Amino acid sequence: MKDNIFYITTPIYYVNDVPHIGHAYTTIAADVIARYKRLMDFDVLFTTGTDEHGEKVEKSAKSTGETPIELANRVVGRFKDLWGKLDISFNDFIRTTEARHKEAVNALFDMVNAKGDIYKGEYEDWYCVPCENFVTDTQLVNGRCPDCGRPVEKLTEESYFFRMSKYQGMLLEHIERHPDFIQPESKKNEVVSFIKKGLNDLSISRTSFSWGIKLPGDEKHVIYVWFDALANYLTVCGFPEDTERFSRYWPADIHLIGKDILRFHAVYWPTFLMAAGLPLPKKIFAHGWWTVDGQKMSKSLGNVVNPYETVEEYGVDVFRYFLLREVPFGLDGDFSVSSLRHRVNGELANDLGNLLSRSTGMVERYFEGVIDRPERVLVDDDPLTELDAVIGEYSEYMEGLEFSRCLEMIWKFIGRLNRFVDAKAPWVLAKDPEKREELRAVLYLLIDSLKIIGVLLYPFMPKTSVEMWQRLGIKEGIESIEDAQAGITKRYRVTKGEPLFKRLED
Ligand code: MSP
Image (tube, rainbow, N blue to C red; front, side, top):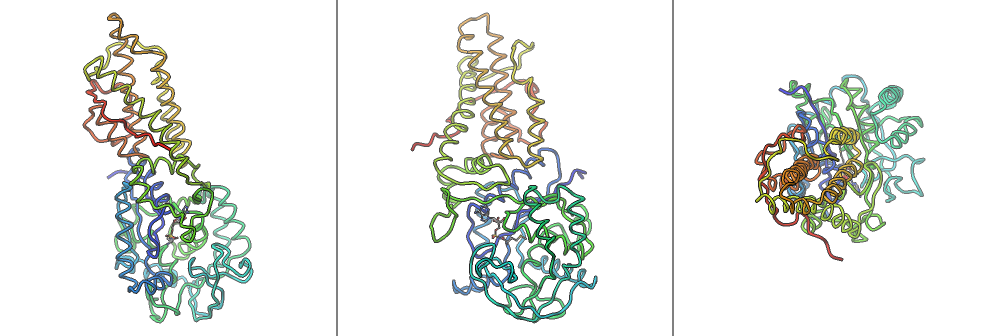
């Protein structure tokens, strides 16, 4: 068994909506990290799933004339199908309607209850159904939900409460002691000032609808959907029965989420865990939101980016690359076809695609497709002398979830290789029989560099990387960062093939 263990999660997605670019973004980013960690020889648990309970799903099912579970069964297929298309390498997919999850929620509830942190009371406040969140009078913005701007409803009901207020000090102290707990920094500051305003106790049960997990001991109540949903992170790693698996993977290394659900993850979730006496996740990272052509994405504007269509049209790796290259992770970003086209034509087709096709093309032309490792070092200005620095920066950016900077750095290296080809002008060397060894050394070096680029790009564009390796005649799969070593391959048998990326016309 590996000692290096890494557990990363995506949010679990509501089944009342079909997958869009926002869901795809979180999941692709998590996949990039999971693949990177596997390259670094970690035993990775990467999980995703669907959030199937709650009033929102119940209402949605009513409007489509289905039962909630029928709705869930239908929509869960859409998510699984999309993750297949996007090459998401998750290890487990959790649905909150599964029996194992009910067991975990009950166990968590019992632990918190045993601590004396749950009491029965009366709840009256504003409730935002789309956000599944109670809002106090002072939080309302123009009488509407402060998060989504939609109308709220007044609710009064008997409810069980969680003594969240008790954990205010402990939570602030934890955040202070663990500077990486909430990232990025700006988001952490928002959470801290929210907590400092004072934490209220939290209503964690409902009686106004029935689609949920029944509260242990009082079946009139269903458990609040966020208590239910957050517990998924425990369910997938074996809680409560499989103690060996649980102690292996928990606490999670990263909960990757969008900024809109930060409060649930950075305030509610840690306090539930504190009350249950369980360790807290190591990091909660909130990424930004996508707009489309400068506008908020919405069904009514009809501008929702459908990931299926985008992948159909441009290819999965183009989509993955664009999402992570376009916007520094953590900030908001804008999706536009013109900017996607620009990156495809410039960075993918020109810089990377051309480097591969001109390098393999020259090996075909001058060496009948077979290039052997030269015996002696004959090349000055060798770009691979910079390899250690490249890999050092690569790891640093990946560990810091700085995907766009990481890709930018890889492209700098690709640019360096393109300039190296121009400076060495192999087509000139090829005219002089005495320069045959120098020509071989230059081309070997290029092919060897392309193999390394294939490894570095693997977390971002797995299909492209595998395709690159196939064109270089490498039969093994990309498995480890060790594969990014220079000069270990004795012979490459290359094929030029079709362009890696098609240029996109206006
Ligand atoms: N079910 C809850 C999460 C429970 S986790 C214990 C939920 N589900 S969701 O389906 O609404 O969406 C989840 C994710 O999609 C969030 O991380 C959210 O930030 C992300 N996005 C939704 N729209 C988005 C954009 N326009 N842009 C980027 N991400 C967005 O919340």
